Image 1 (spheres, rainbow, N blue to C red):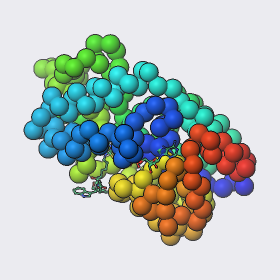
Image 2 (cartoon, rainbow, N blue to C red):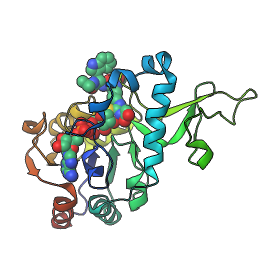
Image 3 (spheres, protein in one colour):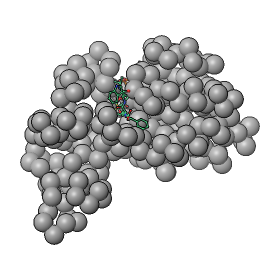
Length: 233
Ligand code: BV8
């Protein structure tokens, strides 16, 4: 069991019990904003102030939230495994704060901002970086306005080669807290299944792609994940 290659993919549901809003639940982020207005490259061109304020509000919230028992259980589990890859669709830093290292943030991160001139990203979470005004880079002779270091709809997710390589080698593929709406993330369970992995889902409700999983555990990640991972050790 210890030699098993494990890949874990998390979504907004794993951070829900930390108080981070999900996207598609009742009080989700997409209830207030049309995704096209705040999470696409075109939105950033059309109304950078609206997009910037949407992300600045979520960046400021990072300071108020803490990892929950699901993040902690995952970090403890990963500590004991030799072959584990943690991929998250989330842009918060709760996996890192729970102790996970080298988490793959396939949809980017709220903590870092990206210079569109140089392509470099830098952590910018100082008080002065979190106001509603734009923030400029420190890497160009003429400071450039920084953009959120987020993968928007229509943009290529990060580290896809690494992600496919890990999923194709997996013996066990666990998804925690995702509605299975967004591709290519929602299709990774099929890649894992094709590669012969056992596929397990932990989610509050049955998501769109529930049928693709060998095992489905419905409930809160903070309540189910600790016991489930314990049983795997
Ligand atoms: C891509 C950053 C090409 C933003 C995000 C037209 C043009 C271009 C592309 C497309 C197109 N039409 C469709 C596409 C593909 C598109 C897509 O999938 N659209 C959907 C809406 C149909 N995908 C893309 O554009 C992607 N890029 O395709 O590029 C490409 C691809 C591959 C190779 C080469 C080129 C880019 C997608 C990334 C978009 N950016 N995030 C931001 O965060 O502001 S996606 C966004 O949704 C978040 O990152 C989030 O993580 C992600 C998925 O949502 P979930 O994590 O699942 O969250 P959700 O709220 O939906 O669900 C929460 C779940 O948790 C629920 O099921 C709930 O029951 C459960 N839950 C709640 N509480 C708990 C719980 N579970 C357990 N415990 C609890 N306590």
